[in-house]
Image (tube, rainbow, N blue to C red; front, side, top):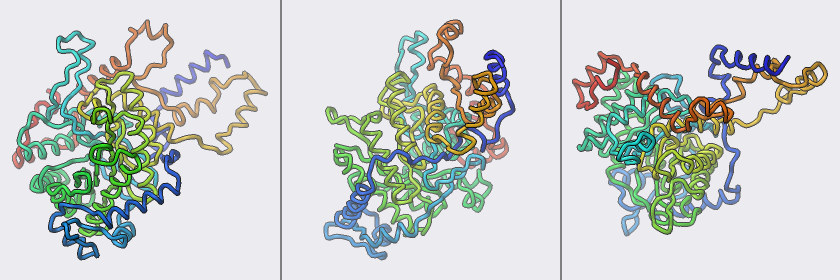
Length: 522
């Protein structure tokens, strides 16, 4: 067979019917865990240091209900008002906490099993701006300006995630700056998120009453509280701590409401190394992981076995200025180490990566995202938050950046899958056939064609053309192609999983600020 004929056969293979999910080259929940920045001995030292910290330093500002739960379980309130967690309580927590939990989507196809070292990628970040970097290329006078993010932007980001195959879950990536009242913002964030995608959504609330109202809305969408509790399709992202080692009272009350309301919870501790946690990477790991273990104990004292995600997110400071540096090499290894600690404890774990310092999706953004997300995925952590669209160390969100990142996640997930070794994959019979029976190349060989869709990932916006072909087609850069792809999605993809009748009912019951006319084509 000629090389030209082999190419024709290859193109025919790629145009074949879509593969079942189980046959795709990458899929949600690939098994990571090959990157281990910490040795077993170092893990044990970190574990012991965490226990020392909780037993001897503990937390300040514990709300009364937490004090009651912990002291009844063997904890102690010190003379200076710090809540101490003895080793025995942490051991009990690790023996009784939930493992192998499932985060549900509104569509069961998007359910995520957090077990072992299965890896999933998604958004997060709560940026306050949208990076309108497209203006740079289209001659706008305010080129490169960041504008304040809106509720419409948040809904559009959820729609974009809903269409991108390699982004597995959606958590609020922007704040609706056009809504000033915190209660209305929390409620509308809930609505825009779950209306924009059928994938699992991460939510957050400022006050306990906001959480109660959000749960009431989620019950309506689910078809009743019983159905919600059977398949909770949203989780709480709870910053329960003000590092170092101080409970955030309002957030703790929100967590109580959501735990008793059947909502899975991400226990998020986000100290900044050199500012609110130690500058040494090991010290930052110890503090944030210890904080998360204390919260895990509190959750399990409220409701034993409640689904909770261990979420140590230590951020990094540029020690020259004190500013956060989300795209640094230190950030990459720090988060990966926290993912390894979570695996060591056998806990469902989520960390953050992809928080580029770059302001737009440029070369700096690309290399910062690539190494931070790669190390996070290969650490084997279950959930990698903030891996999509984030710019300016979480201050900005880029829509076309998210589309580029979808390609990046596909390639990273393929690297996580690794290389399978068995008789079929070693391909001795195929090599023998090609060498002895001609045509001395593998183009068009049945074994090659059979693997084009099952073993290889192809970019949607990345470019693999020759220079001549690329020039002939307009010499478009990846951000230009991503911009076109993003516009196409947002102009054509309008989720309809919340029927109009239910949506009208929600609008009668709740103060929803997103006009329905802006959610669906005319």
